[in-house]
Length: 192
Picture 1 (cartoon, rainbow, N blue to C red):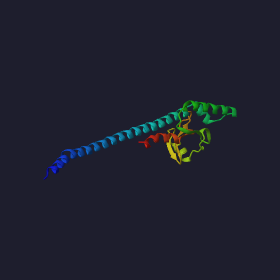
Picture 2 (cartoon, rainbow, N blue to C red):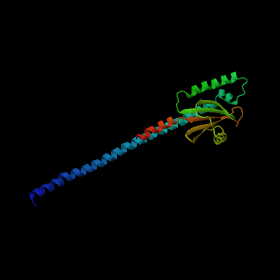
Picture 3 (cartoon, one colour):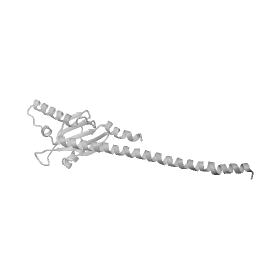
Picture 4 (tube, rainbow, N blue to C red):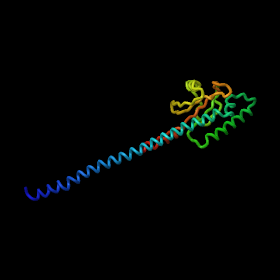
């Protein structure tokens, strides 16, 4: 074997082959590190999304309880006003109360308060509607809230129970969650 072939063979075995092996090893390690970083980022995004939904659920439940336990709201739902002036004042009081408890929360596109007969208060501009199935289920739950989805709507319902008579439903609450809020929860997930 000529010396030049031996030189090329030695160069290939002792220099090029180790460089190729080290290159493959570094490539594999870099891919693992990249995958690990991407997984950590996705996990953090999922945790943040979970916290956002938990915050929405907790805030909605808290606001709902504050509404149904407010004496002014209870009286407003029961009705029985002697004049339109009394009714108008009660409506304004409920509206002021809603401003105070909703504050800067932008989760909701619509909040509705119903008597057992009709819509009494609406904050927002969605078509006021509560299905008989949701009405019936709210009554069965005796003041416990529940979430429901229907065509293009993500809503929270709760029966308003009469504090004067145990087990008597006097009305219903309906919170319609703003689609933009839900979109914001998921927006960051798509960028991971």
